[in-house]
Image 1 (cartoon, rainbow, N blue to C red):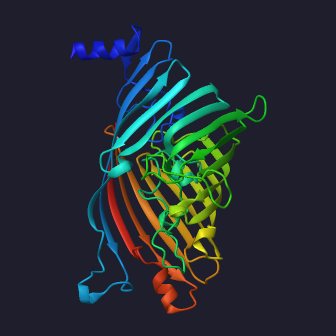
Image 2: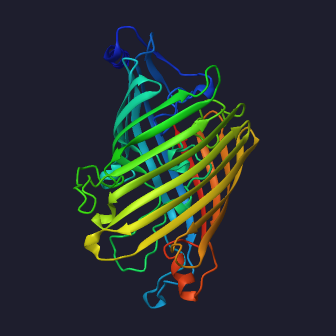
Image 3: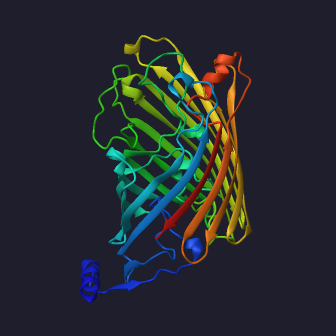
Length: 414
């Protein structure tokens, strides 16, 4: 054991020390997107001058879930059941390490052993800091779109993000390759970002992110893109985000049992253009607006987003489609270890050219088991349909989405 410790210490410097990190919870650094590297979970290896930091981490999520689907889309002749995609699941089994070198360069690498293909590499990036207002990041990481995705993994109010972000849209064309969703998630690329003080001597902060990504999502780690035949620019995802924080830096959490005092608020706008996405068939533009607030035991969050889909000239389809969605959610710690939450999720899944939309109310209860870093989450979501012109439109609008979803998830982080 002593030899192992000596090797770890020498890896960083002769002056490095092994310590248990037990810092003020409001100073938790959540930049790695998985868990805070300066909280009291596990240990952190750090040099005396603070320029070298190394933290291994682990996060596991085990979920039992039940999904009940309506009869539309089911063929009883093939013994298709209303209950499907149910049982036990392991959404994340993440092992990684993160930290800082030379006081300037942050790094993060995480592997999701529960995933397959390119998704096994969940994140891998380095981030060079010229100053807090001027940073440069390259690798695989979260694209700057929607507060729901940019929240630290495992720190969300609900165990699943809003369905309006993840559900595939519906088009009146039978093209299997064209099923865009509003969220952009993880991708390989580069970005400039930073946080600056807007007013001298105040807590008013402005954050920005702007960059280029492949636009292929987390399922592709290679360089597979080309130039746009229509616009004659690289067929990449061009995206950016601008935030305003009037009460200091906003922690990327939707509720943390260690952060029950203090106030933080954030307003944000984001957008992007994915050139020749969906197998070079469409050009997808996205816009979003967001609000989030942590006020002692309260959490409030709301977002709205819009996506415009236009076909490339080679597709010979002279049509465009517009989709939008929104959600609002509220969480409150009734006691320091129990957080209750509600959410209303809305999606115009079949586009603005057709009547009808989906509404998806949900409730959640999170129990933070003390001293062992376990989080138990129980949620229920109902998917309703409203305003459709025909019964067929109503039946088609929620295909692939369960009418009733119930889940119980246990999360461990170290």
